[in-house]
Image: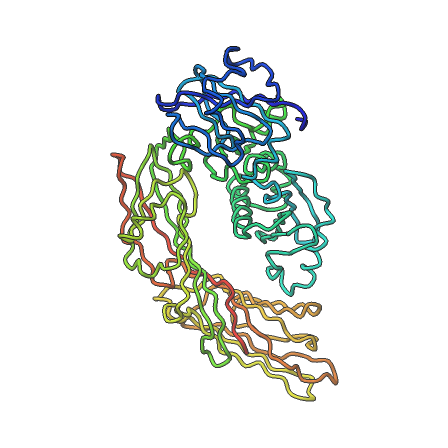
Length: 541
């Protein structure tokens, strides 16, 4: 719509009966409003002395005509006040004085932009680029204006400088833009911002995009995104309105855009229809927008997964340098109606640094340390927490190592043994050990007592797939390494990175006490599962 054109917005609103008038722009020859009685256009019911002269930042009159209220309208546009009869809703950026049940006509021109600074168009997400592990841009979406792909050159330069894929700076400044990125499932989600915004605002939105894709397609991979590219663009169009986050709740989005299925895809191909729903989501109009109305299930069940990820650095003597836990509680709730749940813990004081889903009543948590909430329908993350006190972080595995290189020798020694520690009798599974050996190592001749190992002579990466640790017979990897002839002794010994999982154990000691439901009469099936896994778990040698 051109800047020199008048725009008519017909709206309606329910207001108190004490309101008596409506403000309409005049003074520049307002055209006829087709939805309003002709008698109201350009006519004033108050005297000239009462009429505000310059209303930009000045005070107008409230519904009683006695108390001043702020009116934000452009300069050089006068106001007339007139009664009208019946209608719905007005834009939030227009301050208008009006009567209960009326029709009115708002007129907007280019001049409105000069007097309204509520939403800076620069402070929004302009574009989104998806970059795969090979460094190729395989999808892009633009909202406000088209930004050239060349802006990603700054991101690619930062990617080349990073030692690890996850070490790319989350915020990259460029001469005209800011690039904010997250790495999920080996895909970089790069948002382009024209001016400074709170980085966490953009980062949180990008994580919501990834979670939505995963919820819709089962996995968030390059192949899944390409196979459902139409749905991806529909989702991005609904999640961001002109660069500002609009609908990010999964339940609302699923009413707006139906998740893809094989049958729906075939029908859409034949009929030419889309996945866009025909009705607006009901949840968006309620006080609990995260839950849709009229939910019904044959089997009512609620499952909660307590997943903790331990990050630790262990020195060569086995002492802990640093250790912390990143934990989440993921939920899968399929309950009929509008249930109200409470979740209590045996030791809630462990949860100090906590981030909640919007459904959680924060005041009750502060007062009683009880999670009280009306859950979303389906899968969602109830809370995430962080435990950084080292005395609360137990190290679940230990490593005995002997990695040595002799000066002037072409041989090196490699010995490694793993064992469980402080696991409450739970088995340590899915153990994977990796180590970046020095560049001078040509080959590794090792003998594993359990599992299999691989060594890449090009990247010098040694990987040992251990599997499950048997406490009765600890797994070990022993052998020799061949070095380049005449090469000097490596300056540093390699570090060892370990991945593992422990089922039915929260390493922090967090335990759920009970889960209660109110508001519904049926008895749901409830289940709690715990798991600990390694994050960045590093042992120095």
